Length: 273
Image (tube, rainbow, N blue to C red; front, top):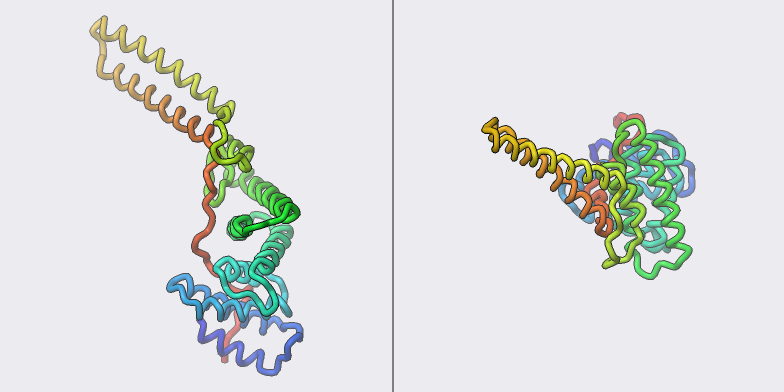
């Protein structure tokens, strides 16, 4: 694929001058070349492939259309640590990638992969040292926007769940995690979600009921094994809910984001001749 896109680039970009607006064929050639290099980088990480991908996609982001493939492949290059363009810091280019993906998400619904890339970029930005308050507030706004975007996907695809990082988890648990997202480490445990407390109370009542039934069966000589199995099942369910309550009461776990990326192919194809 890389060889074919190299041939296409040679064909379509031979007379191009810096600053010229890319034609559709030129854009496809460059985005395709970037995606091919990123695909090889994902299989066998190499700074050479990453920088080749970045060089191609930089031209598109400067003089081309900010299509889905262009924006996401650019964001992937930045997230993987490719060198920024001349006279641009890594932090500044990270901000550019975040802005580009945010703008793209504002025009498209239900693109979970793009949202995952966006969340990964936000995590990297939050790890940048010495952020000022304006930058922190901006990142918080982006995070809220991402939560809303994923909740829109959840409303149809995952009605009983919400997204925490790249993982779909029970809705109430994620809402609880989001509420305590900024809790300092070592803070006192908070009360578990109300629904979990109700489920625990019901499970506890079931244990008491099954214990009484088991005691009665033992006294009357009935099906002791069956009653014991039901009692054990009730205890196991109560223990499971108790564990969920303990997890919910602890500080929110750090969300998991993308560690490997799937490059995005250009919209349409170019046949190299």
